Amino acid sequence: MKKKVLVSWVGNTDIDMIESPDAFGPLESVMNAGSFDIVYALTSNPKSDMGSYFALLSKKHKSTVNPVFTTLIDPTHYGDISKAMGTLISDITKTHTNIDITMQVSSGTPSMTAVSILVGKKFGFKFLQSTRENGVIEPELPFDVAADFHSSKDNKTKLSSLFIGEAPDTAAFSDIITQSPEMETLKQKAAIISKRDVPVLITGETGTGKELFAKAIHNTSQRAGKPLLILNCGAIPKDLIDTTLFGHVKGAFTGAIHANDGYFTQADGGTLFLDEFGELPLDAQVRLLRVLQQGILTPVGATKEQKVDVRIITATNNDLGKEVAEGRFREDLFYRVAIGVLHLPPLRQRSGDVTHLAKALLEQINEEAKDEQEYKHKKFSVSAINFMDQQSWAGNVRELQATILRATLWQAGDLLTEEDLSQSIIHSHKTNTNIMDRDVSQGIDINQLTVEFRQHYVVQAMKLCNGNKTKAAKLLSMENYQTLDNWIKKYDIN
Image: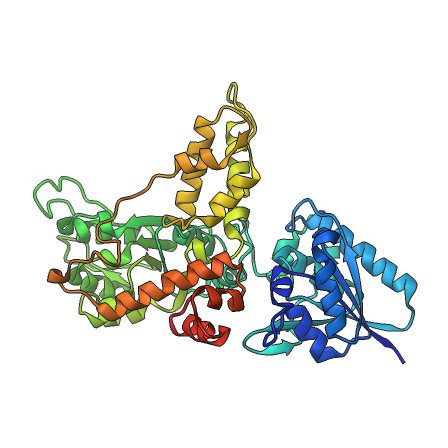
C-alpha cells in the first residue's frame, strides 16, 4: 500500500493557532482531513523558535512529522523557495518509493504557494487547501503550469504570473505590484474584462491604483492600438463640460473662433477614462447617457449628429450606490457604466503588500537616481520596514511612494531608518476625524459612527495579533473568537 505524504510550508497562521482548542491552522486542517502517514513541514524560522510548535503538532496528530528547516533571503524570494522545495522533493523521492504526494497550498507566503503549485504540477502531485468558507478542498487549477513554464522560449516566465492562473498579463498588468490574493484576483478579473468590449467601473480610495488598472485594461483590449484619453471630471468647470466632452463648432459661443473636437471624438475607436466620475453634475449625466446608449453626439452649436465608437472606463472614490439612493447620481447612468465592476481595496487591507510595494518602489527610485552625483543606492532597515507596515497609509500607494521618495532626498547615506520615514510622512489635518468630536448640530449618523468605532478597533487588534482571532478577541474583551468572527463578517472587515 502506498504511503500518503503531505508537503507543506508552515505559515504564521499555523503557528498562531497551534494552541487554539477550537480552531486549526491550514496545515492542521489538511492533516485532519487527509490522514497522512508522513508530513514534511518546511519553515524558514530558526529551530529554536519552532521546537515547541513541532512538538505540539506531533503530539496532536498521528502522522510522522518531519520538520524541514531552510534559509531564505526573505519569505518572498522565489529562488531560495524553489531551491528548498526542489531539494526536499528530491530527498523524499530518494527515501521513499511507493508514495502518493500531496501539496498543501494554503500556508506561507504567496511566493511559497506559487512555487508549490509549479513543483506539484511538474510532478503530477495532488493539491489541497484549507479555507474558512469551504473547509479543506482540492483547488481548481485550470492551467498547466509546468507545460507553460517549460515551453517558454527564453525560460524567463515569472512565477508570480503562473500563480495567478496565467491571466493575460502585459507590461501594464505587471506594473500592478502585489502579493495580496484579493488583488491578484482583481488582476485576473480585469484581464478578463479587458477582452470584452464592455463599460468598466473602478471604485476605491484615492491612490489605490484606479488609473493603473484602467491603462492595463486598455492595453490588453482589442482597442490597444487606438487612443486612450484620460479626463478628470472633477476638474472641468461646469459651463465647459459639454464642449470638453462633445466638442463645439466655430462660433458656437463667444470666443469659439475655431471648431474643437471633444474627448469623445478624439477617443473614437479607442478608450475614454473618466476619472472622478461621480463629480459629474446631473444635467451633464443626462447628455452623457444618450451618447453611451446610442453612440451619437452633437457638438455644441452643431445641428448635425455624429457617430462615435468609444469604450468607457470610469473611476470614482464615491459610493455611487449611495449617491443614486440620495438622488445625486442617475440610476440609469449608473447601471449603464457598472458592467465590469472592480473595487480596489485600500493598501491597509492588502495583506503583505506594504513591505512588498515599498521594496519595489525603492528599487525604482534607486534606478531612476543611479546617475545622479553623490546618490547612494538605498535600502530599508528592519525598523523602517516595521514602521511602514504599522501605518494606515490613508493616501494608499501614492502616499507610500511619496513618503519613500522624500526619505531618499533627505538621507545622504545608504540606509533608510524608521526616523527617516517618520519625518517624511505628511500628516493631513482633517476636521472632525475624532469620533468623539463630530458636530451634532449638523446632524450625525450615530449608527454609522458605531460601525466606524468597531471597525477601527477590530482592525487594530487583528494587526497587533497578526491575524490571530483568539488573541484579538481577548484584547477586545470578547468571550470568544466566534464573536469577533461575527463582527468581521457583519461589518465587512478585511
